[in-house]
Length: 422
Image 1 (cartoon, one colour):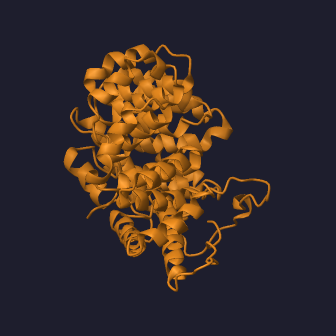
Image 2 (cartoon, rainbow, N blue to C red):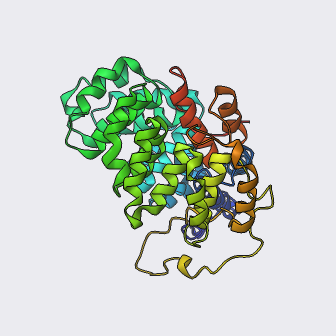
């Protein structure tokens, strides 16, 4: 987060510090939310409470729109996504074209800031942003078109002909980022009329275009396209987690096991093997996961995979350690030159008590027959998955949403990072 915005001006409003605090708090809370939607312990209710706090700060800013815009506009110069989110929401709510243009320009000038801008468009009610999204689709600026596609993705709204037209324009197809993002939206929204577009994109050389074409094809029901995700699932690359999340849910069990064997032959891919085992949901992996739980560096994610397959909650069933094991291997990178400040993905997972987990598994393993895919201890069904989407932690919700999208031809891929609205 950036430092608090200076309140020293020629003719200070006596309440300016309050509005500056509203802006700072809203940006900080947005950052907390952006982290929370990816954490295993956050539920829909937790996200909703954070959103209520964000909304309260935004409402406070709207009590003095001009003063607040001056503060937010200055904060945008830092290109931080939280600050851009706040400024963009203020601009669109204020209905002032110049402010909207300034917020959009700031968001599009930086990849990180762009996340805040897209988030703002997802946050706003349709009456405040739909007309602008249409303008972005018809703009000559490819950044605007990308923004429109990303906003429709976040909102899970079908732009219909606007999306179709992108695939009919050679200049749009020559823009890799826009092309790939549009391909992703095809799968998220289950636009089956655009399957021919995916077939064409499967012949692309660009890895992003190739990945999203096959990813969307699988979601549209072409399970054979899951095989094309093999290089993305088995090699370290920016798409590996997404490839694993989808492919191991779509592949036939024997083929999925063969892929896991190939991953397991490479020690540096052990975390990927754990994630693949969780996505596959085959109880045959449990004994191997119990071994991984003995390694402090892998213990928590192996415990998460165990719960994902069996539905046995480590904390609820008293199977988590009260204290922490030797974390020497877990010391985070404290190199001040390293700008990667992402939270450890295991940060909010419990450490399993391996002895107790093993004992429970020995007692109940006969209930989990190998060869049957399980999600939280059950064969995937629309009802059970919908309950998980509603009541599970964020990672559970994400997995259930993917399972639902694969299970039902008509079910779009639910955006588990969307506003809670409960």
